Length: 242
Length: 242
DNA sequence: TCAATAGTGTCTTTAAGACAATATCCC
DNA sequence: GGGATATTGTCTTAAAGACACTATTGA
Image 1 (spheres, rainbow over the protein chains, first blue to last red):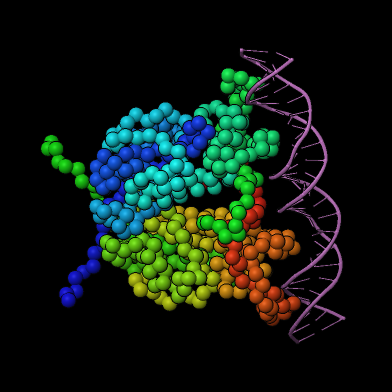
Image 2: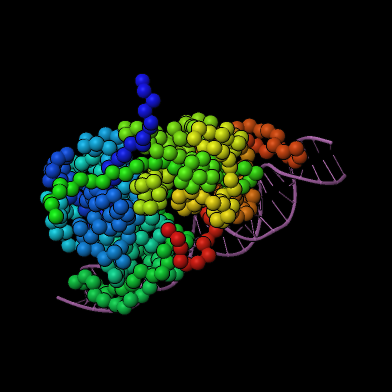
């Protein structure tokens, strides 16, 4: 047994995006259908390898995002979710993926993109239920992304990222209800968001639906951290997920 | 210009550990002094490259942790903090580091470890103040780790991980005060932790200091998610860091 | 005036904030 | 008893939970 000098192993670095949005008052995640093996024809998160060895990881996430959606980088919410690098998660070799969470306002069906044979919004509960065949460990990544969004809704103004430039309080409530998967009392919700100074600021009036009283419009305010936080009803068990 | 087939670039994968503990009622972080270039003689987080291409990342974090401390894997809190992979963060090449956050009960000075010329606990505020010369982007990683610990103290029973198998309520309060950097009212703290069912459970009595009434001992309870959460006093500005 | 949605007000309950008083040890 | 720390209690205040009612539009 010779005393070979040890050299550190190398890995392939990928970026995956959990892009969440609201469509028809339900949480959706953007998936692409893989056109190549492995997992050909299965659904997968948009993403890909670094373009070149010097590419910044966050820049790669932005690049992938703009390839899949038409979102302006400025108005966008994009944050790192975590690293997924189990050996064996990718049959091609040691691929370590950095997952990002992006929140998008309602968008039209994405134009079938670059390397994806097909892309579209899928209901999050359907994706997480296990009915859909997903590539790699992407179901876990999506579950983590949805949970992150749930937590961030409590303590940050992230909910406004699901809305357009202006929105009504009812629309904002729909965000919370869809992401948390529960119903909220509109009267208490009004009181809460109105007294949280800087959360939302008035932006005029407008008709919304074909019927009923027109709702006031608001824009996202300067506050990013909500204190006191929005309260999500108690978990059922005393045991709790991380 | 030939049409070379594109191949994805590879990176070196490292693991870095932010190990926090309480010593003398102050938050400390475990640092090693680098014995080799780059950043020779500067302080750095314990960590290193993957051992081999097939090593699990979390397993690598556990391995590094046991090399630096004598912590039992079972009683240990270890969670992924994030990925740090800016090009240029390491002059040796493209090194992407997965940072982990570990919480340790008070330990003796670590035995000078494997690849580290020297290792020891450093006060967190001193490290973050910038007085200490730190390798790579490790100051940022430590700052993120401390902030993660602060947030997790609010919503989880992580504070008990700073304590030994049994602890007094005053010791638990010291954890909160040290990590949050504020003072808490002991009477309100008692009320809060006692009424949070499953947070701590009685474990007998014992003398603690050389003087004063003996304090009751507790163990960590089954509850991991605190609801309602522990309340950290309000941020000053309406602007808030993420 | 009716259907439908938007918005405001009130009472109750829970829990945090701000305090003081008592208990139990060692010397 | 004195010094020191532990523990319990009370009053006040802030905010969530649970409700019912009024307002404004288009048809």
